Image (tube, rainbow, N blue to C red; front, side, top):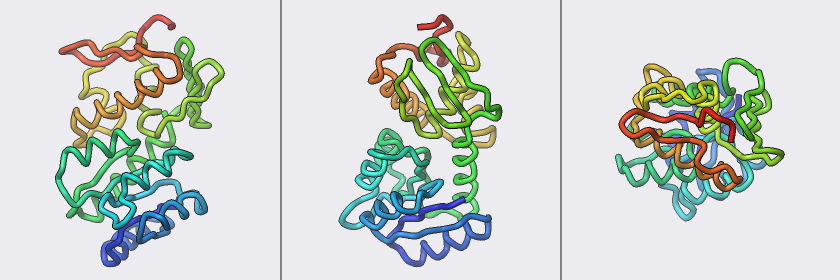
Amino acid sequence: MKILLVDDDPRLRELVSLALERAGFQVVTASDGQIAVTHAAREAPDLIVLDIGLPEMDGFEVCRRIRARSEVPILFLTARDDEIDRVLGLEMGADDYVTKPFSPRELVARVRAILKRSAGPRRNAVLSHGRITLDPGAHICRLDEATVPLTATEFTLLATLIERPGQVLSRAQLIQAVWGALSQVSDRTLDSHLRNLRGKLAQAGCSGVIETVHGVGIRIQGAAT
């Protein structure tokens, strides 16, 4: 699988590239935002590792431009443990983030986890719930006949809820189902992805299907809507 690594620090690019290649990935690198946007279109990577603090065109703008035409998974790198940066990145469509400094082993593990999610639910059977249809094999979400573009994380999150119609899942259960039992994903990260997912469904004409049961958890409406 091909990874696009975007960072202006040549030493970090070399270190991370080596770790990813040792893990069996093909790596394409970019040192600035414009090159990253070009490579994202030309190279068709399976995942992008994207530094927020790029010169001239920062990672947020790069993400915005890529998201205008692609739902490729994006893992943000940030040099600051800044909650605003993390939340903004997730709301713009990033699938996860890693704060510098980080270990190459941690980054490879995060990359593998995102790619596992991007493969969709383990089974390839089409899932349906009311007007919503999910095709995991093709990674396509449809509302009636319209396609709803979802990131890998949003797709897996929606599939997890559809597989349990009407059942209230705690945030801890959702995090474990989507990110894995050993993940350290926060409730805020989950809420950012839920907010994005709800917004996309509402924009397509299906608002309110994902409900919050205060003090308990999240569910998708049991009855078809």
